[in-house]
Length: 511
Ligand code: AHR
Image 1 (cartoon, rainbow, N blue to C red):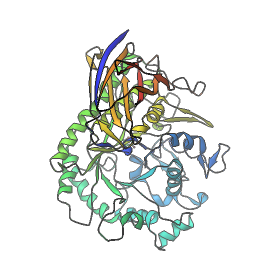
Image 2: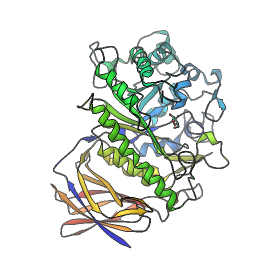
Image 3: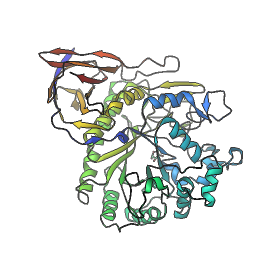
Image 4: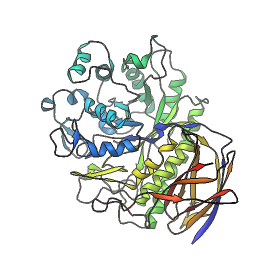
């Protein structure tokens, strides 16, 4: 069965830049997210560079990951950075709250920075406000960023890195309304001012030559923001920002976390062997992202109509029930075509709100929740979501272009939503790029496009589709769901995109 749809792409009306950081990721010290997934140790038989596995690095490099958030999450608010530096054998082993297992701290600051460098990503460090202190955070920043021969500066050099590290983003606390300390919004703001005043980036290359004048490379501080639709944190943080004193502290972003659950909610619905009811429930739940962005962007507008402060969705993804036979708190789940479609829908939402949404970090990069990559000992596979991120690379730092869409809805029971979703942008290569998603499990969508403002006579691209919503890649069949090239026909000068059921298509228009 096929259904017609049409789009009008206004290439002559460019919108805001879709920041590359919208395609960022999150890696927490949790389960096999780092240990086994990224870090195998220098003596491992698994090929590695300084302990970091080479297959995972090679796969992530293809995604051009712009930024990685680390070390948490809830883990960040219990993390003592001093446990994770120096000779590996001398590091303090602690207990990791995720799974009640020994945290060897063999992957610490220097290993994370090495990993970020190997994949070509910027660092987003989340400091400990929950159980730490401003002094501890200030010392960590000094260790990472000073160019001076202070004790901490010399310690970093002795640990193998004489040059200061660059930190692009600094998260000040994490979910401080919950696992980060159960603070009211006002309590958080009081703490924020202390931490942000003292946790200073000392890297001269980022700070510029003149004291108190921030360079364009300055580290950007992110405050804890809303708990779902509640606006108390949004309001209190933005009010504080609007009254901030000159020179002592700043806020560049407000964090928003939103996870998608299935029919039974977050952490409760299966990640494999499910049917359309589960798919439709996840789809319905994930669309709440648009509403949350609208609510909080409007609340921010009250203090910041010029949109100077970004909304950073620094944790999001489809959070299913952990797989049977695994440590429940390791949060390992199967990746499927449902996840790929949800990832594309969310990336489209973020791109449509690029005027306010400046960074997002899918949770999480490897082996945890909505992962790009799964590993099993020496084996590695790319999930369907990985392929979406690879296909969307041309949208990094692209200029958004408005797009109108008309067509049928996808329906399941009482739920309905437009069957086709999509975005358009002018890439850094100067070409027009389109991403089109067909959410229907049975219908092909034939989308006729009118492109205003450019002449196009050819189009080429890739499509990621699957026959079933729960189709996924396994270690025995790692390429069961993978993109293939797509052909685009033109009729009367207009491209017609034939979108298979359950598919994500990314195409480039050519003259
Ligand atoms: O991503 C898993 C956890 O979810 C994070 O640690 C926490 O911030 C959120 O609640």
